[in-house]
Image (cartoon, rainbow, N blue to C red; front, side, top):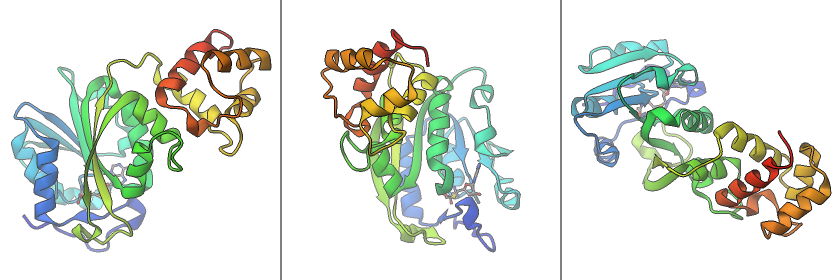
Length: 265
Ligand code: SAM
C-alpha cells in the first residue's frame, strides 16, 4: 500500500509520514507481531504502519489526535480507532484480560513525555517498540558521564532494558524531517524496587542545576542535614564533587534507599 499523504501535513503535530515500504516491512519484523497480540499504536497518522501490522495481530488500537486523519484510518479490519491525545489515554483501562504491546512512530515534539508516561503505566504493558528522532534515541541510551546522559536516560535505563534498533533515513518520510530517526525496543526490568514517582522526584532534584555538584543540588532541594548526606555519599563511595550525570541508574537506586531513611520527600 502506498502511504496517503494528507494535504498540508501539520508540523505542530509532528506529522512526518513513513512512505518507504521496505522500511515499513523492516519495522514490522522488528516489532515481531504474534497472532495473539493486542497492540496500541501511537499516532497512527494515515495508517502507514497500521496497514501491515493489523492483519498480523489479534487487535490493534490506533490512537490519533488529528481529526483530519481519522477518515484514512476507518477502513482497516481488526482496528479500533481512538481519537485522542495519547497523553490522556488510560492504557491500563484499555484491556482487562492481559497486557498490551505499544508501538508508534512518535510525534517528535512530545516523544520524551510519551515515553515517561508509558513507563509510568508499565504494569499493563508487555513491551514497546518506538521510533524517535536520532538525538532523542541517543539521550535515552547514553551511558553515565556521556554529554547526552540526563534525566531521560536514567529513568528509562532504570525501568527498561533497551534494544537499539536500526536507523531510519529522513528520506523515508514525507515531509522530510531535519534529522534521522531510530527505532528502539523497550522491555521492562523485573527488579526495580523504587516506584516511578519517588525515582522521578529525586532525579528532578539531582538534575535541577546540571552544572552544579550533585551534593549541592540535593542539599538545596531536600530537607537533609549536610552531615547525613556526606555520610550517605561515603557509604556509597561517591566523591563529594560528583555530578548528577556521573551516577548510573543503579547508583540512584542505592542513593534513594539511603536518603529514604533520613527524609521524606
Ligand atoms: N504513524 C504514521 C506514520 O508513520 O506515517 C504517522 C507518524 S507521525 C510522526 C506522528 C503522528 O502522531 C501524526 O499522525 C500526529 O497527528 C499524531 N499525533 C501528534 N500528537 C499526538 C498526540 N498527542 N496523541 C496522539 N497522536 C498524536
